[in-house]
Image (cartoon, rainbow, N blue to C red; front, top):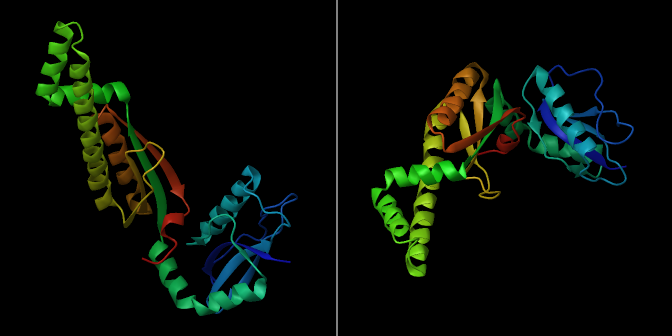
Length: 239
């Protein structure tokens, strides 16, 4: 039977006695060791699908194992032919895994996403671009303006909003990056102007969260969403 892999940690790290993994009923989690590292594994179900139950079970194993120290979490769906193959991979990359685990010691991942409040950012753009505010007033005075005038105004506003998105993304990153040990930029999708993952030392967590709150409070046109602490999925690979 194939082996499902949840994450990698130090062989010396204390782990919970019993962990329930993916599957229904939950498959028992065991360890595969090679040298100073081990992998948290279970049998792989015959059909592996990204069901909510199994996604949460995968996450739960990583979080519970991480209570005793750092874990290199694998993303959902990591399957190896068997335990022997897992052990061989652990042995081949032991030093690299240990270095990465050391880099994660005492740290958690936080994901920060931001977007604009649509109406608030339009007000913000007009308040900081008097020439656009003047065009808007002129169009209103002319009963809305001609088609070409409205089109031109819309294009100028869209350009100004895009520039504001770029400026706000830089604002968020520059405010939070100094408080983090590392930073990863997420894919530019989903309508977010910023999608950033930070690796934060636990002793700086409150300071980091306070700056996130201040960004949202001081910039009313920004909608900031933070998720964490999380297993360090974004930082599991070597730099």
